[in-house]
Image (cartoon, rainbow, N blue to C red; front, side):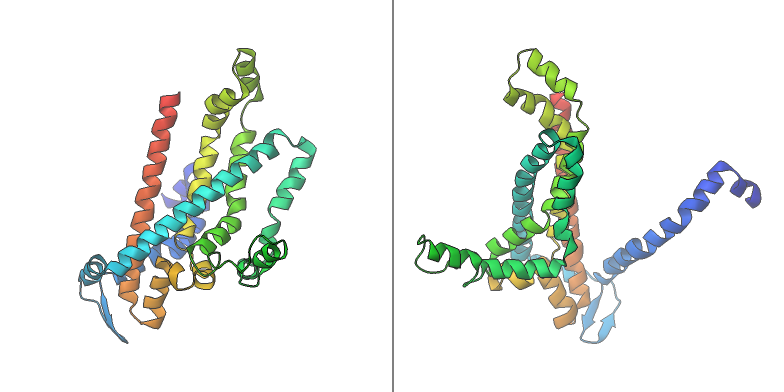
Length: 290
């Protein structure tokens, strides 16, 4: 019976899918399950108590610092997403509609150049650029626009947003570009032949058809930035710490893995709820447009 099933088309397909499925379960599902279980336990230094309890979630709800860090993380992630997507769309639009087809691969190659270097190196480079004696401050002083270095562009939330927006720019440009490339140009020509202006053609045809790419860019940028740890640690200073930094502190510095796991679960639920809400609103808007 088993050999007959494995010799069938469905059996062969299941056999081919099983290794990567088990690999994904091992690397993704099991750690999530472990974090979920940890969040209902307690730890006293080296002693781990596996008794079921909601004390970790109760502490998160009662102490304002956790809520403040989560709100700041959501604000930073939303700001980075908005800045990145708004700046990425014109680049993707120019690349799709105004660059010769034989040169598009070169432009895509140039866009991916930042990936050639380590993420950590790029963060340190922004630290040099935004520093008290960095490139921006030195340049502005030399041209006479300011008398003393600006202090609001480093070791705060602004520095975190700037650095993350640059780091995730290619992740926003590429999905929008792919969506724009799929648009049938004859639709745009037909719209203008019927008397529609270029702006209204963009609003009524190009933008709605490009929304799947925009949604993909938003999710690709929003979800990982809220859990970024390196950038807030190096660029945020005392006023730029995010929820990921608190999770790291609970796991390592304070040796309280259950509370850190509970914080991770709460952050993950918030991101999931916001992402699903955004997708549903976008789908409803697209249906209304159609």
